[in-house]
Length: 346
Image 1 (spheres, rainbow, N blue to C red):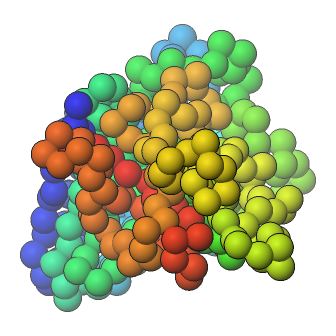
Image 2: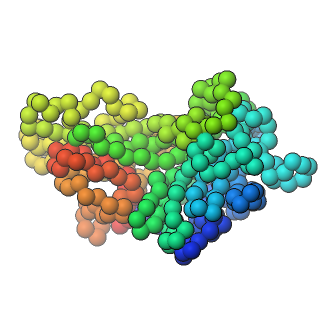
Image 3: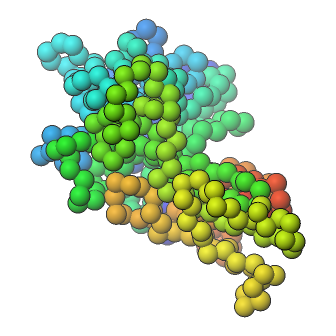
């Protein structure tokens, strides 16, 4: 079944509030919220807070994502374990202890990676688009992409409140960081698709302990913009000479990459033609046993190296077609894997 695809538009010149309005509509349509948990502005920046409540009975059963937009076309997000939107002051702030439950207060939180994970940097003088891809098989899975005719941000997803969690996660002891992005890269003849976590605080389960003793207000690559590979998939390359073997497979794969079942007929004559299927039902999140829905997939493309955003890969014309959401073009054609993250659109 094809995914549900919808595009939201803000005509130029647009503002940070326009960007957040697009995000609000997309999150509502994706079933992630009915309204923002909090909405306010500080020092020319605009803040919107999303609450994802995984288990109301647990001490840290909710994750709070504070999205920040500025006047320059930047969008960031920061994570906290609690939030006070109103009532007893101080309001419009995360709750708890700094570095343990949050990194910075909003007055000190901009869109750069030192204070938040920057999700997009786009021009306010060009029309802005936000594409939402929601699975028809599992409507709890959606990927969002901010883009313009020239520039494009990485796809990101937020773990839905109704997605089942691993039973061994103790939300009375800590919280989860449910925002993921997708990266693609090509090294020599190999291609990689990586699912990454970007936000962390010490209260976060599984990865928060890495911040023990960390009290630096500059959170780049620690609290924010981690690019921590939770799952990595690789398509190996091929070469007719032994000299290029090292460019076709490597022991230094990022994130302990899992090899996908690609095959070259020239290497293994049991295959009458080259074999490079769209691979779905993959593990993609450290928080849930739920696999990637079958209308999303990872595909290693070999025939050319000029893939562009939303290019179509056709398994059967008019019946089974896939669209590229994230990709990297390998410099080597045919023998080099160009990795793509795809959604089924037909």
